[in-house]
Length: 353
Ligand code: ATP
Ligand code: MG
Image (tube, rainbow, N blue to C red; front, side, top):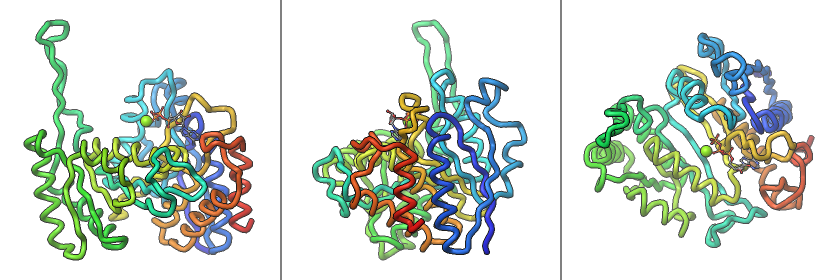
C-alpha cells in the first residue's frame, strides 16, 4: 500500500463543495491501485482572512512543505479584494514552492456542447503551459503623482533567462510526449524587450527538440485561432499573463469553466505541487450544491499522474468521459439539473464503485 499525505485546502464558496468529490474519486481509484490518501485539512481562505486578517498563518508554507501534494478547491469572496487571495495565498505557495509550471489541459468531451461550432468532441485536446512565477505579475512598479494630471502607474514585467528556459523546456518535453506540436505565445512586435527575449530563449530550447515542430504566434492572433480552429493546437507555452488569459479562453472553448483542471507543478519535486481547478469560488452559485465537480475531479487525476500513477489518472478521465457521453446527468452549467452530489455519485458508479 502506497500512502500519500495530501494538504487539503477547500477554500471558499464552491471550493468547499467540489473538494469532497475530488477526495471521493481519489479514494475510490486509489483503493483499486493500492494507494491510500491521508488528508490534512487547512482552513486557509477568505473566510479566515475576514476573521483573522490573513489568508494563512505566517508559517503556512512550512506546515505543508512535507506533504506529497496540495489540493486547493478555490479561494475568493466578493467582500475581499481579489489581490488579497492572490497575494496572500496562491502566489506565496506557487513562488515559495517553485511551482513554475501551470498546466491546464483542455478537451472537448463528447456530450458537452462547446460554444465554438468547430470544436468537435474528441478532436480538441490541448494543454496550456503557463509560466507561473515571474513575468507580468511582478511587484515592481508604482504610482506616481497621485491626483495630478500627470499621474502615472508603472508596472515592470520580469523575464529571466533561467525562468523562461525552464518553462520552455518543460513545454517542449511535454509536446515531445504528445503530438510533437508546440505554439509559443508572444507579442514581440509590440513589447520590445521582454518578449523578444522570450522568443530567443524558446528558440534556443527548441534546438534540443528536433522532433517538435513549433512556431511563435502573437497573442492576439493566437486567441482568434484558438476560437476558429482549436483542434490544431497541442501544447501552447505562454508567459504568466498570456497563459492566464489563454487558459480561461480555452476552458470556455471546452464548454464550461466547471470542467477545467489545473496543476501548479514543481518539476524538480523539491517541493509539493499544488492542484486546483481553474474555476474560482463562484459566489453566484455557492451554497446551492450545484457546482460542477468535474474540474476538481480531473484535477485529482492530474494529482495522481504527478505522483506517478498515470494508469489510475487515466481511469478517472475515462469515467468522466463515459458519464458525459453515456448519461444525461449533468450540473446546470452543462445544461442539466443534477446536484454536485448526484453527479459525483454517477462518476463513482462509472469508476466501478
Ligand atoms: P476568480 O476571481 O476566483 O477567478 P471568478 O469570479 O473570476 O473567480 P469563477 O468563480 O470561476 O470566476 O466563476 C465564473 C463563472 O463560472 C460564474 O458564473 C460561476 O458560477 C461559473 N462557474 C465556475 N465554476 C463553476 C463550476 N464548477 N460549476 C458551475 N459553474 C461554475
Ligand atoms: Mg477569474
